[in-house]
Image (cartoon, rainbow, N blue to C red; front, side, top):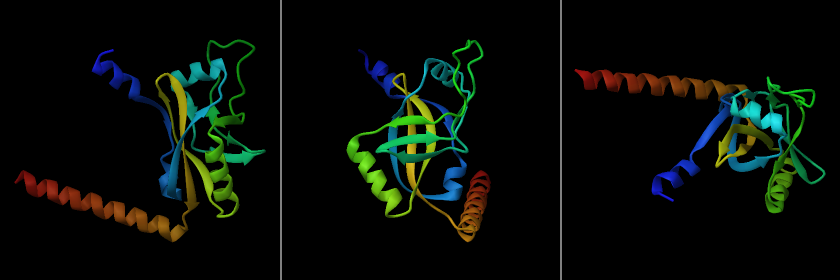
Length: 161
């Protein structure tokens, strides 16, 4: 295998992102997880037909499930096509699940998906342990981003002169 081929295997092809996650939550920790999908769901994901904006993860019976993720039905699918908004099991190690159970139950944290992507041909989900932001935190973050953008713009204009 050539060095270029190994780099191609490690590249990830993003399918869906959750940009509001960083706006609504303080991200404390992130995990990469596999996801259990049916054949038509994988085909639909490869076409980029997914949304994780309303999705969240929940721990049930010692397993982690992703709720509210929308994968549109595959156009060439037949009567065995999938349900677009069903709950999907996440594939994590036992220790990771136990840590998530402790964080969500004792500390009151939330599990939210950040990104859905393919890595080496397998569908993966980046999930985050997060704490919800208050309204004033969201406003401060927005003001800080605007100030940083204006400062960068002033520096770039000064550099052109």
